[in-house]
Amino acid sequence: MLRLAAALVSLLAAFTAAAQSNLPAIQEPPAVANPYGLGALWAQGDIVSRATIVLLVLMSLASWYVLVAKLLSQSRMGGQGRIANERFWKADTVQQGAQALQAGSPYRFIAESAIEATRKHGGLIGKVDLNTWVAQSIERAVGTVHSRTQEGLAVLATVGSTAPFVGLFGTVWGIYNALVRIGASGQASIDKVAGPVGEALIMTAIGLAVAVPAVLGYNWLVRRNKVAMDTVRAFGSDLHTVLLASGSHAA
Image 1 (spheres, one colour):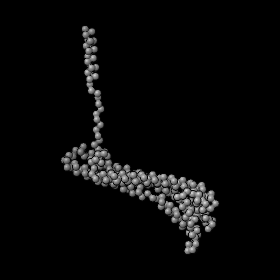
Image 2: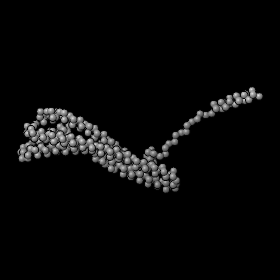
Image 3: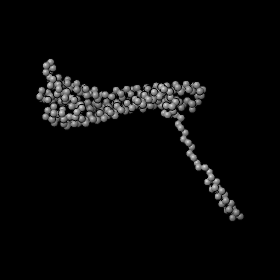
């Protein structure tokens, strides 16, 4: 009896193993494409929605380009300031000190402007006090340098102030189109409303994502410009003192 039971168990185990070997391999369920998100927003959007997205992308690219370019320019200006402090004041004359600076350096531009002012101090200009004339010339040169450091910041300010409203416009337009489609279909269930409305709200998020870096970058660059211009103004003030002490023979 025991032998018969053991044989039946062995036969059942062999049958089970054979059946399992013939079963098809378990396959993972196919990935379901996300019916919502940026891809769906672009595919289902009209020309206004797509133009809004393209505009936000262009605004983001412009702000990041200005941010990187200004950071490189400010770093270069900081290096030129260190070179000016190392070389200029060790020269025998202002002319030699200006020639020791890098071409295109704002410090060299200020020094050359001051030298040119002392050379032109004659005729009608000679009736103006040398101190006043040189001070005005250096001040104009410093103002020119300051204007150059402000280039591009208007782009960041514009993007930071308008990108949220552009994104909000895209959201309003998207919700309008979503409600029109829902009303036309006659289906107002939550699954029919949440998708289109959620896609429209993505536009507001994109607008904020474009605006926040632009605002932060603008404030950061303005602060760095202020520090750089303090150094430039200090250089101009010291140069003014040297030129007055040297008189017309400074060049």
